[in-house]
Amino acid sequence: MILLTSAYLPPIQYFTKLYSGLPIVEERADHYVKQTYRNRCIIAADDGPLPLTVPVETEAAGTSRTPMRDIRISNHGNWRHQHWQAIVSAYDRSAFFSYYADDFEAIYRRPYRYLVDFSADLLALILHLLDLHPDIRINTEAYIDAEALRRQGYAVEDFRQTIRPKLAADADPSFRPVPYFQVFAQRHGFLPNLSMIDLLFNCGPESRLVLKASRVE
Image (cartoon, rainbow, N blue to C red; front, side, top):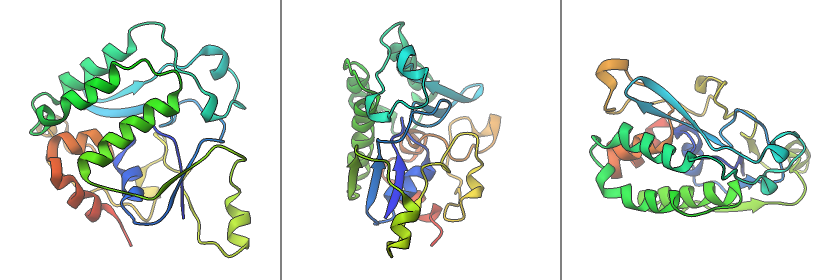
């Protein structure tokens, strides 16, 4: 069993867990934490790595004890348009963007109330385009105690605290970033472990091969 958080357009490291073939539990009873992949992704823009952050309602974001399942998206401002335009600007020259763009844009046009629902639809779209079918179970009840499960004899890999923007991906011994073509590589060099859409838009169906090669058994 692999434990993951909910995540907005999560990085390649996250998707290697979905590719593993093991049962996945997406934790939604965990407390909302700022500056994590829960509401942030990182893409490769013309100027280098660009974080995109989904704004959440101030009242909910002000307490670390608000569970993810209850975090509401803030609809103030024009962030949906800004995120989508940033994605278009970053990837309209990539090999596969035109094949997938309409499906992604449709999600950005929907008026989601909860962050987990928005993230879940984006995740489902990426999995569909990759023809991946992981066994994902959603936990909205009590926060899962990984150590207690291990004491009961369950094999549990817990990545809820370790797949984070401020933690180096090489801290995860089961993940090995594999270089692939990126639009701005000549300018910035290869940028590892960006949002999965970077790999998808650049490599299309071959993204599965990169995910497989990025897993360390």
